[in-house]
Image (cartoon, rainbow, N blue to C red; front, side, top):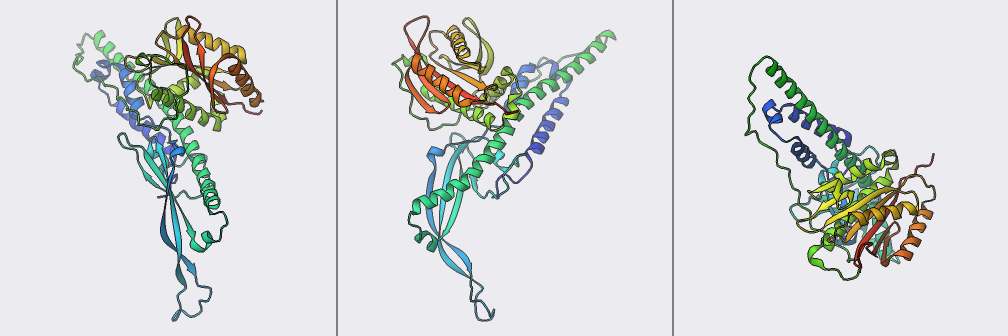
Length: 415
């Protein structure tokens, strides 16, 4: 099939929005007045949320099989005696790229696109099984035999082709993430308008002394709890031994961090969309993405001495806590850490800080400042990516340690 070639993404998003709006407008007065509006917001936001595509490039596999290609006969002159084309031996190499997310996104045409065909076979994720995108390359046998470094040649051909797939996925992910935020805001507006209309009708009935009977058994929507797809987790950061029975698992912690990195990396690819947003608006968009993977993500949540930006409660264990900030220098980093220390209970020891650089042209210097600070103030440092640090710190209120992940992303736009 040819990916990214069907319905335009904007048309698809508009069609989904129209479906939701019609459903809400069709609510009876009894239904809207007898239900919990927030439950309906959660229901629609989760039902129509689009999970961004996440590629597991470390788990790409390849197979090879015999094939053939048609080659034109350069000596073709007489159709009655000679074939115009003949088959020539070839090899087809199939690359299987595991992925997670809403597979339908791979069929949509994003507003920004690379003008080239995207032939691939797609196996959709199902249950706890991840999906896969299979890209095939066919090489003439003579061509392959003539290459002195065959592995480098084939790998180079695949990387060149796959880079365009990465770009298209980043484009459609950015649009899907924005849609998730917009549909949530739209649902709130549509529900409020429908409720206001029902209340207005109820008020008129009251003034006319006509009884309005509300059905107390009107169904309340139960939010759909989306289960997380099982993923291959990287090696856990080496931190000082901490009692594991009361904390969130390394798998959950690293999966949350991976989702944050995927979302924020998408923001960097379309900075004009996000640079104009306030700190709280970027955070709310990130929360919307996390809610497509976990059912209990909240923002501005009271926790010990204040309200943390992002909080994920996992079963009866500690919660994941994160602060999102616009980068204003090391003072902002230290202030954010002070906030985190105020939010952490004795159970919390896996937290993160996410910074967005909107004002500094020299992003390299920003990363160098953070790197120097991390080396001076933390231990067990793992610099997994150029913009991510995983480390260990001692808490302010006791002698225990906590794991800290620091992310920084560049949203600076040259004027």
